[in-house]
Image (cartoon, rainbow, N blue to C red; front, side):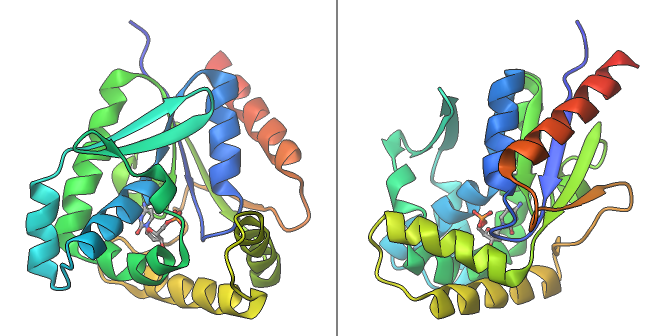
Length: 223
Ligand code: DC
């Protein structure tokens, strides 16, 4: 059996990594692992259960079976069999997810779940620590970034499409705050792996980035 390949993509919110990772996974027939969706799912469950203290959130996570499904280019997140996907991208989750994702036991459990997925096939995984902590031996590592204005513009358009009432200034503030917490937290901070290729997507279209990465994958697979 050939070894399963891992492509790991990290970067801040709005850098384009989710769109790129999804397209890449579809084109390659790999499993798409949206690690941010897992942290969002725990945040949603904590808010639902009114669990505010770290120990309560950890206990809650232990009692839930979290599953990611990726079918026809669409990701679904199931908690104890319930589809909670549509609940995960709201401003209230954005405001609380950094708190939940800096809890060490939450990270420990989710990292184990993510690592376990390798046995099901080749992966394209994206998040904040996939190149550094979750899959340090990934065959391909990429760090995607873009200017704060461009990232805020992209997220704002997403909210606008969903008719969420939020200003671009609020979106930008939330992104900057999340960047700050995600990069400064003690456990698995967002950082650039030494062996990652840095791609600034401010000036590139999604298709250009996907093409670039596909070429990299094919070059690597030839070896
Ligand atoms: O990629 P995203 O915006 O869906 O991620 C939501 C939050 O989850 C982000 O603010 C930080 C956290 N996260 C993390 O700590 N580690 C990951 N591997 C992925 C996301």
